[in-house]
Length: 278
Image: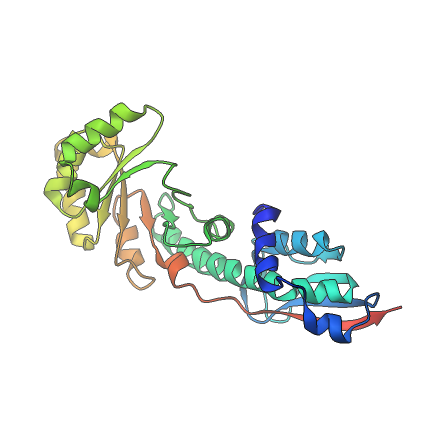
């Protein structure tokens, strides 16, 4: 689960000096019952995060649908009982978290299943194209995908801007000398650089913005030199739901998409007060 402290900052941002509307019109000790409902079909995520937020403010939570479950429009995800002001204070933050995470999980699950029908060995991964990193990465995992790097500290990924400053072979040599524990990945955009990276000892080669036929050429060239089994191959850039199966038919290990997080459509969930408690 995403750490509670990380989640509470969103509450503080949403209500820096309290919820003035609820404080103005709702008695301090009023209690209520509420439900969180799915407004569309998909994969639900962020349930544990929402539960932790509500419980932090003293609201009793009953989980009806768990993270990773397929839900239908109208399904009850959470049942809530507690102080009315507390429920309303957490409402929007909890729904925002669940909406974003469920949107990512739903899209990830859809793409993972599409790829696995063609090649069950390929992983579908996200990227670092997100500011809500912990939330987005957990949602990808719930959807069945690979989160990729959580941060710049996790693995060495040599990209075009690094290679504009240091030659490819020298960059790989320095990276290997820097740490024996970090995976060394190199981003390339053509056949020649892919072969150079493999010869220099890269652990992972990212084939960036290459068409399926170009990727196939790289794979064949690596095989001819006996290098294919020495490296993991990742394809990235320009990959969409429409063309992802073209890449899945190839002998690659990972397909990564920034679109899992940078342009996700929120999943529609709502909270409804269903009664007052004496």
